[in-house]
Image 1 (cartoon, one colour):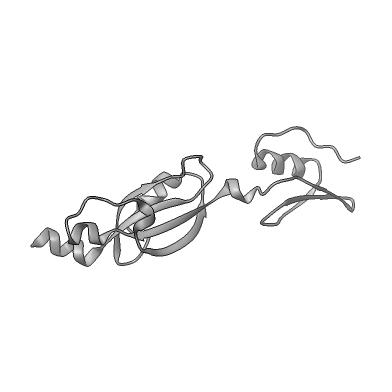
Image 2 (image 1 turned 30 degrees about the horizontal axis):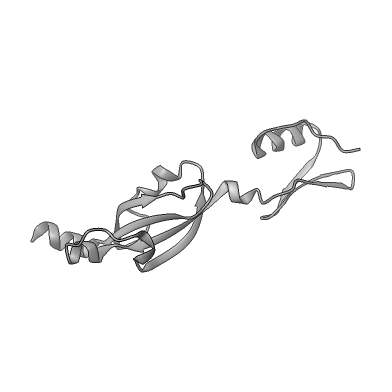
Length: 132
């Protein structure tokens, strides 16, 4: 019978599996542990905890027309991508996230597992507004 110690994180599980002689391979929706031809599966989508969906929206019109911010769902979407969830707050605040745009703000999901939204401003417009 296949037994594994109760571990809290996928990383701890991988290390324990390797120590016990398991061959680990990953799929996007399920993690498999293979040992002597027997397969054990862990239920759930572990990738949901490792990756976060990020929606990049253009908030340039707020600056162009000097308007207060709108709800994030009202802005045009420039790009949607998946990023590693670890340290996402710091990774999103980079100016090189989307070429030609500068970082303005970001907001995370309320429950911690949803979609992140990043507001960016057109770099040319920002330069024109700063230099008159």
